[in-house]
Length: 203
Ligand code: FE
Image (cartoon, rainbow, N blue to C red; front, side):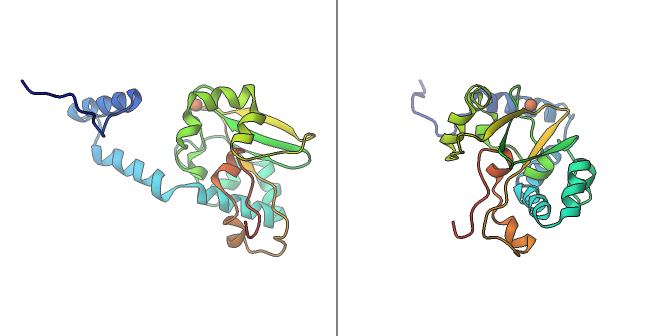
């Protein structure tokens, strides 16, 4: 009898096992090309990522005409920078500042603006984040290390397949005259979801 009671280091979560099973069936039935799946994953994990969103934010901070266009028509303006594709339909931008801090969640699943942020982080898809971002946003923010003034209003936005959000964080002080490239380095992925702030120079 073959003993098989050791622990595996390659165990899959329920969801990963379901995805693996589904992919296997689709490939076996010749319904999808595994190379195509790999290409999509590679694109969104390596070529498309939060560096795209950071460029949008840096330009919005630097160029008032661009910021105005972004407010008027986020989709067209973001597409004009070449950022479009899957999961990018109907993007809206949310501006932090003026006593408002925006926090983005998808309470139902994991809707997320792939074209500007890449694939969503694991915590974004987790049940606790999806529930608590709505029920106790300040506690969630504190866990991410974000402490806001008492009087700041936290607005929580629920993403859907119809609308996905990009947060424009507040521009850090001490960055007057910086180039867009230098500014973009300060823009973290979390700051564009609302679970973080833009980094301060030298931080
Ligand atoms: Fe979703």
